[in-house]
Amino acid sequence: MVSETRPTRRRVLRAAGGLTAAVAAGGAGVLAAAAPAGAANDGFGLRITDRNESDPRMWYYRFATDAIGWDPGVNVLLPDGYHGSGLRYPVLYLLHGGGTDADFIQFDRLGIRALTAGRRVIVVMPDGGHAGWYSNPVSSNAGPRNWETFHIAQLLPWIDANFRTYAEYDGRAVGGFSMGGFGALKYAAKYYGHFASVSSHSGPASLRRDAGLVVHWANVSSAAVELAGGTVYGAPLWNEARVSADNPMERLGSYRNKRVFLVAGTSPDPVNWFDTANETQVLAGQREFRGALAGAGIPHEWREEPGGHVFRPEMFRQDLDGILARLRKA
Image (cartoon, rainbow, N blue to C red):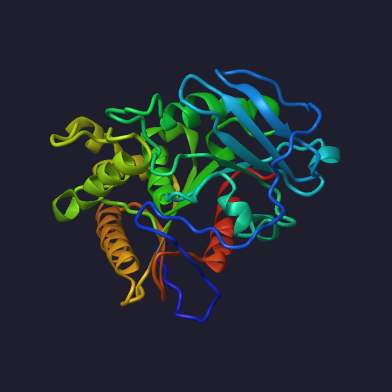
């Protein structure tokens, strides 16, 4: 189904940087201190180095892993009543955007607890690097930054082993904002059997358009703040096979039999060149991607909303309704 919402006035949260930029507005009781050990255990290449399991819903962990040169964190948001229900739940992997202030706590700052109150879903929000682009980079001068390995080969099975989930295709969704929206589209296609629903909120969907502008931005941003001069896709020459493997436009068939949800802004701030450049490219890429999906007969939902490169809570609520309708019920 292809649909569009009418423009409405709404509160939005503005990103702080580029395609890799993310929002951090306000504090929402972020968990940081360690707590006594709970049910979760080491495994799948992950060794817990810090944890807080004292909150009824938001559980926090930090891991040592050979995939990443420092200890990345994850917030696991549990549904109300999880501890006494005995039920299994679907899982949403929610990927943050980029920027020097972006991390696994981003969606807690954005009010994810209130946005999911009363909803029967586990939300997993991992670190993805300031400009990690949800990839194993072609080169790094900062030690290992293999975010794709961390998320897919390590964290996903760790979550299934330590929480009451549906460890199957119809039990998982992946979504994200900005850089995380790209990561969601990439993971859903590249690891087809892992996710039945994919959502991209202001995430780029076409790597090669406009002479590969998104690839260039991924390389420049990762070199500057993530990889100490290394790059995600290689420079000056790209690893073409890697670009094609990650490009949603080149993996259209991998979106069949999935729920696909896309959001982009139509009116970025004209005096903010970051906002204008970013969302203009996102909108153009999503329109190209939507056209290709439609041409291939692949159902999808889309929204074009007033504003620029921002996370829209109202769109997330609509998205979550669709996610829960697609996945297995608790």
